[in-house]
View 1 (spheres, rainbow, N blue to C red):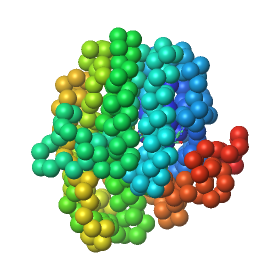
View 2 (cartoon, helix red, strand yellow; view 1 turned 60 degrees about the horizontal axis):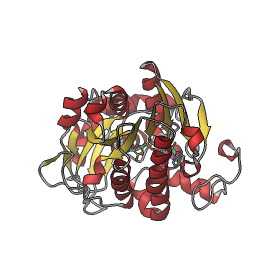
View 3 (spheres, protein in one colour; view 1 turned 120 degrees about the horizontal axis):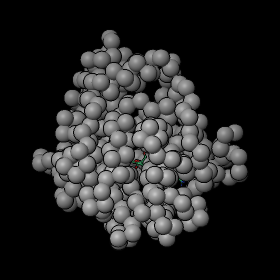
View 4 (cartoon, rainbow, N blue to C red; view 1 turned 180 degrees about the horizontal axis):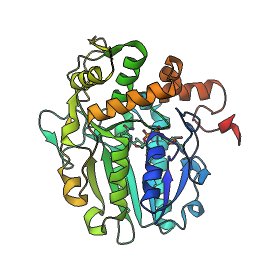
Length: 345
Ligand SMILES: NC(=O)c1ccc[n+]([C@@H]2O[C@H](COP(=O)([O-])OP(=O)(O)OC[C@H]3O[C@@H](n4cnc5c(N)ncnc54)[C@H](O)[C@@H]3O)[C@@H](O)[C@H]2O)c1
């Protein structure tokens, strides 16, 4: 298939593109390049890419593709809280516009990267795709709005599929340090401490970036009836863990590290455990990566690449990197690049 991947220069996109290529797809990327240079270790082999902001995409840029995988977004809760209007502009309005243009351009399948945070506070039961959506942040709310709006475009020529990913972990050449396992392993490697700022009790469903990629690869080629206008949680019940359990796994794999639960950030309402049976049934998807294996991989890669404290706390933290782009004038307040060619300056 000829596939357009938006956000291909992000944390997940950089891992997903090789998986799609290995499966035989012809992949083109589309990204504004906000994190293009945020690389740890060897530079990835990016596919041919369209350098454009998704708010400015035209229909002609979307024609000739069998499918669009839409990853591009401002992608975490603190970012959304800092700039809710920009989050809604990019994550909601531009995503709905992208889906509409893709449909007009003749794209037949649209895989959307949603999130399990649409469930918000989940209670004790495992949440299935039919659970009520209770987004707690502008980021999660923007994902719910896209699912609702893009679902109305579904017809016999256009199949949207909503993949609600658990929180990702694992090494990507375009690292993110602001997601829980990557963060805990990094601090352990750099400081010897596995530091948990909450009280450790919130549940987090986790999934490896490469498992997310393989779930998308399956959804891309599944029979229409199996996926048409459906939502799927992406992950595995085995990786529904409390933050304290995740931290304990990190202590086990990072030599000489010790656990510190400070509780200083107070209570965290984002707590939920997720049911992943629908994607197993519909797509035969099984996540391959456990938390200990992911933590060991991260530890190995961080040490091999010589990860530094400065990079870990700034360059690989989405919010800090965007602030740097803004204060240096490379992007404006709405995160648009100011001049052509400024991206790699
Ligand atoms: N990483 C996770 O834990 C996780 C979990 C659930 C869902 N998701 C979703 O998966 C997708 C990818 O996540 P990620 O971790 O790779 O995020 P990321 O921040 O690493 O990458 C996002 C990419 O989108 C691009 N982008 C952002 N705004 C853009 C714009 N206006 N125009 C063009 N490109 C733009 C960025 O340049 C970047 O390359 C996001 O939609 C995210 O919400 C991620």
